[in-house]
Image 1 (cartoon, one colour):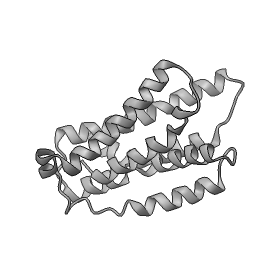
Image 2 (tube, rainbow, N blue to C red):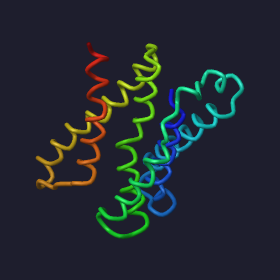
Image 3 (cartoon, rainbow, N blue to C red):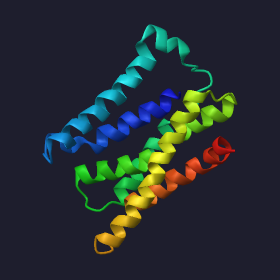
Image 4 (tube, one colour):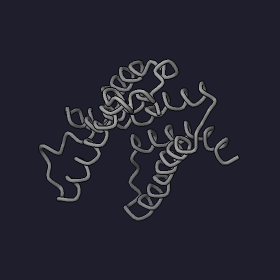
Length: 172
Protein backbone atom coordinates (compact mmCIF):
# COMPACT_ATOMS: atom_id res chain seq x y z
CA UNK A 1 0.00 0.00 0.00
CA UNK A 2 1.30 3.47 -0.85
CA UNK A 3 1.85 5.64 2.20
CA UNK A 4 1.82 8.64 -0.11
CA UNK A 5 -1.70 7.88 -1.31
CA UNK A 6 -2.79 7.46 2.31
CA UNK A 7 -1.24 10.83 3.22
CA UNK A 8 -3.12 12.45 0.35
CA UNK A 9 -6.36 10.92 1.62
CA UNK A 10 -5.68 12.40 5.06
CA UNK A 11 -5.39 15.80 3.43
CA UNK A 12 -8.54 15.15 1.35
CA UNK A 13 -10.66 14.29 4.38
CA UNK A 14 -9.12 16.94 6.65
CA UNK A 15 -9.96 19.70 4.17
CA UNK A 16 -13.34 18.27 3.15
CA UNK A 17 -14.64 17.80 6.67
CA UNK A 18 -13.65 21.12 8.21
CA UNK A 19 -17.35 21.92 8.40
CA UNK A 20 -17.61 19.42 11.23
CA UNK A 21 -16.75 22.31 13.56
CA UNK A 22 -19.24 24.81 12.12
CA UNK A 23 -22.18 22.99 10.48
CA UNK A 24 -24.18 20.33 12.24
CA UNK A 25 -26.16 18.20 9.78
CA UNK A 26 -26.91 15.07 11.80
CA UNK A 27 -25.38 12.81 14.40
CA UNK A 28 -24.74 10.13 11.76
CA UNK A 29 -23.04 12.61 9.42
CA UNK A 30 -20.80 13.92 12.19
CA UNK A 31 -19.86 10.42 13.38
CA UNK A 32 -19.04 9.25 9.84
CA UNK A 33 -16.83 12.28 9.21
CA UNK A 34 -14.98 11.60 12.45
CA UNK A 35 -14.60 7.93 11.47
CA UNK A 36 -13.11 8.91 8.09
CA UNK A 37 -10.69 11.33 9.75
CA UNK A 38 -9.62 8.98 12.56
CA UNK A 39 -9.16 5.96 10.30
CA UNK A 40 -7.22 7.98 7.72
CA UNK A 41 -4.89 9.45 10.32
CA UNK A 42 -4.54 6.03 11.97
CA UNK A 43 -3.52 4.33 8.73
CA UNK A 44 -0.80 6.91 8.14
CA UNK A 45 0.37 6.70 11.76
CA UNK A 46 0.57 2.90 11.61
CA UNK A 47 2.44 2.93 8.32
CA UNK A 48 4.92 5.49 9.60
CA UNK A 49 5.44 4.53 13.24
CA UNK A 50 4.09 1.10 14.18
CA UNK A 51 7.06 -1.25 14.50
CA UNK A 52 5.51 -4.22 12.68
CA UNK A 53 3.47 -2.36 10.06
CA UNK A 54 6.33 0.00 9.22
CA UNK A 55 8.53 -2.97 8.30
CA UNK A 56 6.05 -4.11 5.65
CA UNK A 57 6.10 -0.74 3.87
CA UNK A 58 8.52 -0.57 0.92
CA UNK A 59 9.68 3.04 0.92
CA UNK A 60 12.09 2.42 -1.98
CA UNK A 61 9.22 1.49 -4.31
CA UNK A 62 6.86 4.27 -3.18
CA UNK A 63 8.74 7.17 -4.79
CA UNK A 64 5.92 9.20 -6.35
CA UNK A 65 6.36 12.90 -5.51
CA UNK A 66 2.90 13.32 -4.10
CA UNK A 67 3.52 16.87 -2.96
CA UNK A 68 3.56 17.83 -6.65
CA UNK A 69 -0.15 16.98 -6.78
CA UNK A 70 -1.09 19.22 -3.86
CA UNK A 71 -0.06 22.61 -5.24
CA UNK A 72 -1.77 22.31 -8.66
CA UNK A 73 -4.96 21.06 -6.99
CA UNK A 74 -4.92 23.98 -4.58
CA UNK A 75 -4.27 26.53 -7.33
CA UNK A 76 -7.08 25.01 -9.39
CA UNK A 77 -9.39 25.24 -6.36
CA UNK A 78 -8.50 28.92 -5.99
CA UNK A 79 -9.35 29.51 -9.64
CA UNK A 80 -12.35 27.18 -10.14
CA UNK A 81 -14.77 26.98 -7.22
CA UNK A 82 -18.44 27.61 -6.50
CA UNK A 83 -18.02 30.39 -3.91
CA UNK A 84 -14.85 32.13 -2.84
CA UNK A 85 -14.93 31.26 0.84
CA UNK A 86 -12.22 29.40 2.71
CA UNK A 87 -14.47 26.44 3.41
CA UNK A 88 -15.68 26.21 -0.21
CA UNK A 89 -12.17 26.51 -1.66
CA UNK A 90 -10.88 23.80 0.70
CA UNK A 91 -13.85 21.56 -0.11
CA UNK A 92 -13.18 22.05 -3.83
CA UNK A 93 -9.47 21.38 -3.24
CA UNK A 94 -10.41 18.10 -1.54
CA UNK A 95 -12.40 17.03 -4.62
CA UNK A 96 -9.54 17.83 -6.98
CA UNK A 97 -6.99 16.12 -4.73
CA UNK A 98 -9.15 13.03 -4.24
CA UNK A 99 -9.37 12.70 -8.03
CA UNK A 100 -5.60 12.21 -8.28
CA UNK A 101 -4.77 10.80 -4.82
CA UNK A 102 -4.69 7.25 -6.17
CA UNK A 103 -1.81 8.03 -8.55
CA UNK A 104 0.99 7.13 -6.08
CA UNK A 105 -0.74 3.78 -5.43
CA UNK A 106 -1.15 3.05 -9.13
CA UNK A 107 2.48 3.95 -9.83
CA UNK A 108 3.60 1.75 -6.93
CA UNK A 109 1.60 -1.18 -8.30
CA UNK A 110 3.02 -0.64 -11.77
CA UNK A 111 6.58 -0.44 -10.40
CA UNK A 112 6.39 -3.46 -8.16
CA UNK A 113 4.64 -5.61 -10.81
CA UNK A 114 3.51 -7.74 -7.87
CA UNK A 115 -0.08 -7.13 -6.89
CA UNK A 116 -1.17 -9.30 -4.00
CA UNK A 117 -4.83 -10.17 -3.68
CA UNK A 118 -5.55 -7.81 -0.79
CA UNK A 119 -3.94 -4.79 -2.46
CA UNK A 120 -5.63 -5.52 -5.78
CA UNK A 121 -9.02 -5.81 -4.10
CA UNK A 122 -8.39 -2.62 -2.11
CA UNK A 123 -7.64 -0.58 -5.25
CA UNK A 124 -10.48 -2.22 -7.19
CA UNK A 125 -13.06 -1.37 -4.53
CA UNK A 126 -11.79 2.20 -4.19
CA UNK A 127 -12.35 2.59 -7.91
CA UNK A 128 -15.67 0.77 -7.84
CA UNK A 129 -16.92 3.05 -5.08
CA UNK A 130 -16.06 6.08 -7.18
CA UNK A 131 -17.57 4.53 -10.31
CA UNK A 132 -20.87 4.00 -8.46
CA UNK A 133 -21.03 7.75 -7.95
CA UNK A 134 -21.65 8.05 -11.69
CA UNK A 135 -24.98 6.25 -11.28
CA UNK A 136 -25.82 8.44 -8.29
CA UNK A 137 -25.15 11.60 -10.32
CA UNK A 138 -27.30 10.40 -13.21
CA UNK A 139 -30.13 9.56 -10.82
CA UNK A 140 -29.86 12.89 -9.01
CA UNK A 141 -29.69 14.78 -12.28
CA UNK A 142 -32.92 13.15 -13.41
CA UNK A 143 -34.75 13.62 -10.09
CA UNK A 144 -33.42 16.98 -8.82
CA UNK A 145 -34.44 19.47 -11.50
CA UNK A 146 -31.49 18.67 -13.77
CA UNK A 147 -28.92 20.29 -11.50
CA UNK A 148 -25.49 20.11 -13.06
CA UNK A 149 -22.60 20.09 -10.59
CA UNK A 150 -19.53 20.61 -12.75
CA UNK A 151 -16.78 20.42 -10.10
CA UNK A 152 -17.78 17.14 -8.40
CA UNK A 153 -18.71 15.54 -11.71
CA UNK A 154 -15.51 16.52 -13.50
CA UNK A 155 -13.38 15.44 -10.53
CA UNK A 156 -15.20 12.13 -10.30
CA UNK A 157 -14.84 11.47 -14.02
CA UNK A 158 -11.09 12.16 -13.84
CA UNK A 159 -10.78 9.86 -10.85
CA UNK A 160 -12.76 7.08 -12.52
CA UNK A 161 -10.70 7.44 -15.70
CA UNK A 162 -7.51 6.97 -13.68
CA UNK A 163 -8.85 3.63 -12.48
CA UNK A 164 -9.84 2.46 -15.98
CA UNK A 165 -6.47 0.90 -16.84
CA UNK A 166 -6.31 -0.85 -13.47
CA UNK A 167 -9.86 -2.17 -13.94
CA UNK A 168 -8.95 -3.58 -17.34
CA UNK A 169 -6.02 -5.62 -15.99
CA UNK A 170 -7.74 -6.52 -12.72
CA UNK A 171 -10.80 -7.99 -14.46
CA UNK A 172 -8.76 -9.59 -17.27
